[in-house]
Amino acid sequence: MLESLFGNVTIEKIFLFLFVYGEGYPKKIADVFDIPVNGIQQQFKRMEDGGIVVSKLQGKTRVYQFNPRFVFLDQLKTLLQKAVDVLPEAEKEKYYRMRTRPRRKGKPS
Image (tube, rainbow, N blue to C red; front, side):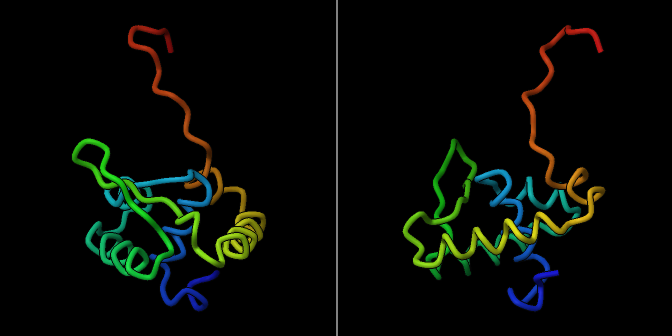
């Protein structure tokens, strides 16, 4: 949907993931969308160099989020909200449902 605007579909998926979940790391995003992790890492590097995202280490994992100082962050989030609004329900459910805490160990199904 937005890949022609952003340049490729990987960036679109990263942006939508970060918009919905607030933060993410390359391996998780690769697993969710079943795409190679190195492409996601390359795009994160490019976006971090451009000031669109920032990262921090949590343990040994580099976690990314939108840069709150990015000049066009409000406009980008508005665009992403509109994109999420028009996604088919099946796609929203598959990729962008809000995560819940893991089930407590020993809890009945």
